[in-house]
Amino acid sequence: MEEKQSHLHKVNYAELTPAEFRIRMAAAPIAYLPLGTLEFHGEHMPLGSDAIQPAGFFNEIAAEAGGIVLPTLFLGPDRVETVSGSEYYGKDNGNHATLETQQYEPQILTGSAYWIPEELFILLIEGILKQLKRQGFKILVAHGHGPSTRQVINHTPEWEAKFGVRIFNLWGSENDDWNGFMSDHGAMLETSVVMKYRPDLVHIENLPEDPTQWPTGIRGYDPRIYASAEKGNEIVKIQKERILNKLGSALDQLKDQSEIKNE
Ligand SMILES: [Zn+2]
Image (cartoon, rainbow, N blue to C red; front, side, top):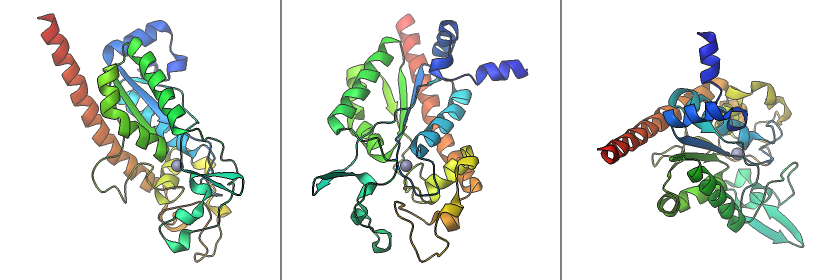
């Protein structure tokens, strides 16, 4: 029994033998792509936070729904601004924070090394989709870094038509404010999910103790007050239910289509 389970849990593309690949593809032709970054997420969080969250989540989903988890990307697009000769990406520029209390001066945040132009990212994903289609994948779940996820969402109708692959992400149309998957930056939501998967990598004690002092590079609800592994469990549970439903009906549709073909 134990052996069978460890076999079921082998879901990473790079670890499969061709025979194992064929078995998993026949059961569920789903690919999962974690859209990571190497990016400052506050002094308390690991630089690979955008990779750790979707990779942890996709491993769980693949073990239940089937499918194969691709290696994590660490390059992605983001807003870019050049101020007196220096490029600032995404959260480097704290002047864009909605709340005045969360604003800070533009700076090259420690460890952020992920930025590529939008056009290159789009080409990269199209290249991946072409390869996945060629191997017979019918479904792609891609999620992670906000601007990467947004590009995938923007191109979903076009890519679905072009590659014949259904594409899903983890953002719903519902108000995800309190339970969204990776919809803040290093704050309550992201910190909680990293705490769930890699509690050893989160160091809340690195943040200022004074609650009136907002930590640089974080946007959302205060992780010092609201983040916990339990909250992470809650977030994952909600997202899991949603995506398992979507994948279940997508797989049923595929089955129906192949039955029609075979008649
Ligand atoms: Zn993030």
